[in-house]
Amino acid sequence: MNGFCLFEAGKEKDLIKDNTRIVQIDGREIVTVDEFIHDIAGQLDFPDYYSSSLDSLEELLNDLSWLKESGFAIIVRNYSFFLCEEKNLARKANLLALLNDVAEQWDNVPNYPGEEDFRNKAVFNIYVEKGSAAVSELEKLKINYSEAK
Image (cartoon, rainbow, N blue to C red; front, side, top):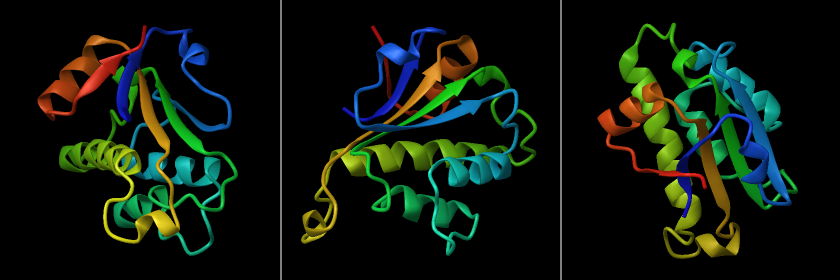
């Protein structure tokens, strides 16, 4: 099942399967939504037409056809600092919900008739370093998560 997964620090390498494109996010360095959008665009080699908005981010995360990998993982370390300087708290909540939605959409291909002609079901997970801030925020936003074993 795709979505959010909490992991113990230092054990994230055990979670990732072969042929997975990994996005590394350090919460100490990515403290606003705009920084996240810019960083992920670079790590996933977004096409030139990318517009640096949440709508464009969602569109491209639901495509990723230019990448050769068949699975995708976003690893967030130091979550207690992640997006801590974002002044618009609703925007942070919207980003987390967007990531959750994208994971569900990849898990449920086809989401509409004909989608399977250009996109296959894929693994798309958001791994978050376990901590009280992560648990509290995901529960507050009613985002389901699992715990890595």
